[in-house]
Image 1: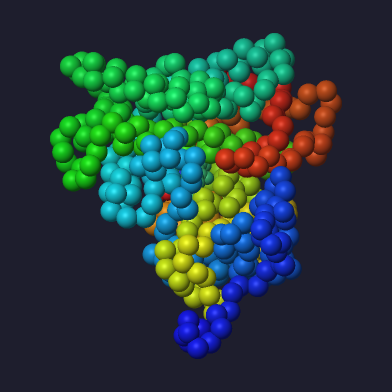
Image 2: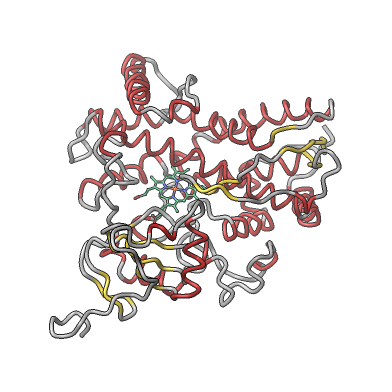
Length: 437
Ligand code: HEM
């Protein structure tokens, strides 16, 4: 028994660390890539130290299964984050919430009340209107042969779709930066909802639902404005850059591979036809689109290291001792490139999913863009709906040509590591309209 006090506990292997820094100095601008290279040398379950905090980095499907399924309960905590005390209302939120009854209740509430299929469908009509606006604007650009900043257009679109969910027009990017501004802004949203309560609205938005639960006492746990704000902030931030980034990566891969773009357009021609735009009801019949999204998230997982987990107990994984309070990092970027699971891992090939039942919902540990288990992404369904719909629409309605005689293979695919791993450079391209009307 490796945990018995008589025997020395065997920690996961890793590189030699420095006295105070531990291994922090080994991580540069792209930590997911640095950790991938380190794991190639030290193995798929690797021990590191970030300052004084022990960390374990998992880089194989089998390792991910141990952490996110077999011992899920031990690893379901999040590290305490100093800054979040101020920004995230003392971690009263979901994303960085400490594992326990409060987080469990809040997550259940979000899953059932805010992110359920019924709710997602309720907002279908609003997504449609927003997409129609974008398509008309791109159609005008196409007539003028204008060069379009596709990245900015997609980000604007997802922002607008999210704003509609919160029913707030005045939201802009800058607000994300300042917690004070954000607080005032969230207070204002709540005030507006309280003021407008009398109004009979057709669709209740997220805030209405949260306020209703708050007032009804249905939540069975302490629930006041701070909790409403923490969760709104979460869903807003979690839903914004993630979906935008996934769409951007998919479009870049399609532009870089014109023959795959053509294949997707052919599928859309068959299923949707050239006389109309894509509807959400078409999505389940678009099989190649599904492959394209999976392949995109295999090579470009938006959160390549998931969100850090923390071990709540001493634990043994694969015969290594992982002490309580360790930071646990699952490198899904590395797992998506594991040549033992994915032949020719660097090649973008949606066809690899033909006849395969590998899915991205957290049951198959070789493909984990949304994580798996207790802490996995509760917004998966909403995210996939938006991502599939926007990609399908932009590819169905337009051909995309790179400007200034640039060849598809010249498209820069560098990554920028931040809250999400996005493209370092915006995609700019010239649209031409394809539909018959
Ligand atoms: C393509 C889009 C998206 C991707 C790839 C994505 C991916 C992820 C990942 C990898 C995690 C962390 C899993 C872990 O730590 O084990 C996560 C957590 C989370 N996501 Fe998403 N997400 C996306 C969109 C969304 C959307 C649209 C929402 C909601 C509006 C959302 C809400 C959340 C929340 C609340 C958490 C924290 C869950 C918890 O800690 O219990 N995500 N997501």
